[in-house]
Image 1 (cartoon, rainbow, N blue to C red):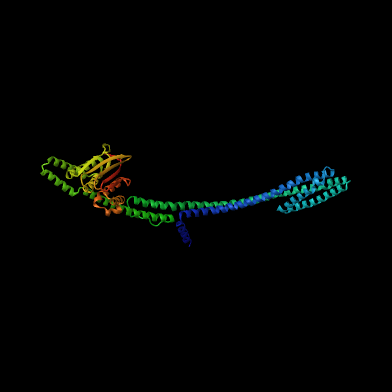
Image 2 (image 1 turned 180 degrees about the vertical axis):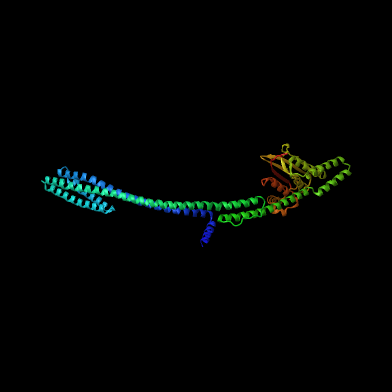
Amino acid sequence: MKNRLLHRIRDYFGDLKLNRKIQLSLILIIVPLFGLFAVLFFNIYGFNQSYDHIIANASEAGRFSIKFKEEFDYKIYLLIAGHSSFSAENPYKNIDQAREIASDLINNTSMEDNKRRAESIMKLLNNLEKYVKNIEQNKVEGGHYDDNFQIWESDVQTVTALIQSTMLEYVYYETKGMSQVREQVSQSLERITLFSIIVFALLTILALLLSVVIPNSIAKPIQYFSSVTNQVAMGDLSVRVHSVRGAEVKKLAVSLNTMIEKTEDLLAAVQKDQTSLREAELELLQAQINPHFLYNTLDTIIWLAEAGKQGEVVEIVGSLSDFFRTSLNHGNGMFMLREEEKHVHSYLQIQQVRYRDILDYQINIPEELGEVVIPKITLQPLVENALYHGIKNRRGRGMIHICAEAKDNDVSIVVEDNGIGMTAERLAEVTAQLKAPEASGAKQKHDSYGLFNVNERIKLKFGDKYGISIASTYGEGTQIRILIPFQRSES
């Protein structure tokens, strides 16, 4: 039964939230301390009240016994000697004030003997009032100076002396009562000290116990989670967090398991995307080496050879060799801009032989930008697009112009043609697809396939800030602007 109860308490405490554990621990420590402090406070307050009560009574009595006799005796002497009048001195006011003080002493004292002494003072005050009235009556009648002097000397001074001695006794016994209070305080302090020692010992044991239990309830799960995350870091995504105690720890365990599962799914998705990306790159390279381009170029070479134009044959074969040497170069997928320029120049030389009646071109790339890195085969697909979907669809000769300039920390490359251009609807469609190719990839047309691939490769290499933008007017031409960072080749 006892083990069952302890097991239930342990389970309850183990499943509590961390803040609840801390709150419960504080309550278990603070409540007993508060109770102890309350006992100490009320005992000290009680003793203080007793001391204050005794000291206040003694002080009041001391003030009464000293000042009352001196002032009252002198005041009556002045009245008898004729130096003052009853209306001016009003001795009855002093008696009434003394009665009020004596009444307070009767009500405030807790000692029966002192209560009787205060009552005796009240009686003496009554007698004193009677003697004062006799003196007053004699003054009214006149001729009783000796009688009045006798009353003052024998009766008034005797009564005030008795009042003074009684007050001294009152003060003495009130002061003596302080020793009794002191003994009570001493005994109470001994009991409180013993009680405090016991409480502090129990609280110390409890605090030590909690200082082990609560940190362990935090440290052990963290150590366990650390072990699990280390396994995950080593590549073991099959590991999972199992039974743990504590509300927050359980939530953290669920979150960690979910994170591991999502990481596993994400890695699988990344592998799939990498495969898809590699396939897309291979498709792009294949698209650049268009068989029709090769067949048409070979036909052109045969035609030139049959026509006996040996110089042009040598020139076009050299351009074709440069073109394929660059296209089939296996590297990290990055060119210097001068290599990209050479590649697109080879392409345009070949196409100008075939389309000499409609094609002119200019390439203006500053020499200082020659070492800027750019994804491999970026310009040629854009030039091909300008030729086949711009220049060929207009009447008359066309011009393809390629230029580049540095802007702050970026490089802007423009491929511009004066071909047929795009309608506003087609331009809007292409621009939207460039911004969200994953949402519209299935709708990409053949005339814009190269644009999307170039744009995506630039963004994959340099980030979403970079890529291509298009401006086009139907009947006037198209301008494609490439934005890349100003990064020089390390080689």
